[in-house]
Image 1 (cartoon, rainbow, N blue to C red):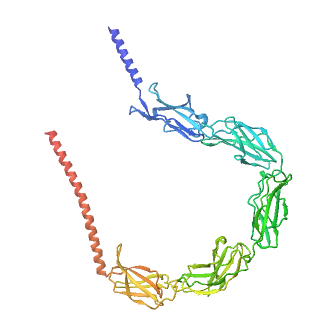
Image 2 (cartoon, helix red, strand yellow):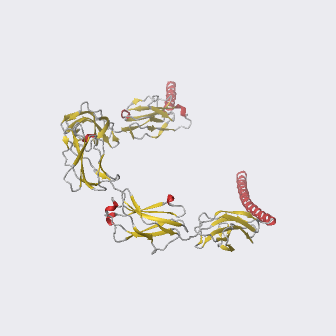
Image 3 (tube, rainbow, N blue to C red):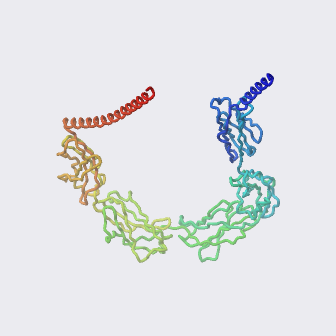
Length: 595
């Protein structure tokens, strides 16, 4: 019996001991790991947030380990960073080898039970790796076949390829072969590329997925050499320039190296007078040249011109096109007639109207393409050295021969004498001037007075002064004055002050009859026969008498104190009532408990 009692006692102790260790300090994972996708080279982090069931457990007893695909991670490596007592794992630059399953294992130091873990997958994606083993499968006179194989797709399907080529003339510049691709089979990684003659070509390929292009592949180890032949095209944008009198200037766009097709590339320029059967020709040896000029004896004459590509194997296969052009323009020999002020339109202080006979836009005396007219004008007092010009463009194709030309000038100073004349313009020159006419703008309202200010302020009067306007726009007759009372943001009607100032040399005024300690706004206008101009205004506060000012300050102060006192009294009264209510409740509860 005693042995049985001892057994039961030992069993009970062992059971309690096991229960103590089995219970441990229980932990739990509050936020489990989340599956993530990251772009190659970018930072990614996993957070395993741990909580404790026992509030007495110290955070220092927490142990967290991280695994990648079942292997313990060396978190001391520069590639990783752990934070928050190991609960956050940061991967500084993700690579494809970092993809897989990550596991967070949390436990309490000194305990063999009570471990918690959470796992999540990391997927690393990026642009594809460069294509591999790019080779020239076949090289023909005008076409090359390329083959290659894919590198890693970066976790996304490859959807496109970009083929690039360079030549021995410029090995550091890679051209995209989009326009030259005849055929591409993305599944077999094959492309056929059209080539120009007389070239030594190397190739490389780039792959593309939804995240972008890969780096270029290594260039092909061999080159594709195409034989020379005649040019297959001619220069474009062939035309003539007309800025030099006595010259025929022919221009074109130089052709790029890939269109030369053989050595000794240049241009064969041809020209003849319109209607002639004989072509003049000149070979230009410089492939970068873009114009040719020759002396001619005709001003703005009509010519046929050609520019053809040539090389050591001959002229281009493409037929050369003939372009119509003109030789250089000269100074017009015709001038407008009957230039005059247009009296049918009302004149103003800042505007003038003119009219003259139109000219025939096809008149040979224009000596160029008719562009319109140039109207020149200047102040009579200053002379032509300070003249202004207005270009009046006219479309030669829509010009009306029977109509007069009308034009206006605006923004002129008022009450000013001017002179004006008009000339014919072609593309590069201005012809002789018409007759010169005189005109004068009418008077206008003046500009605003300057430097309006209060010179002296008292309780019953104010003295204002100002300077005449910069732009009188006529003969100043004097000044008008007005005022309005101001009460805060509210202003009364503007009222005139009498008498008006009828002497323009008087630029100050004493205004009497004002009320002490009042706000006013005073206005001043300059005046001519055309009326008065824009106003200028100044704010004035009259002085108050000593007694008036003191009374005003005292009333304000008392009102302020009165308002502030009410607020304080109301606030203090509320606090006292709360205290009294609390004391009453406490007293009632005490009586119930002790009695």
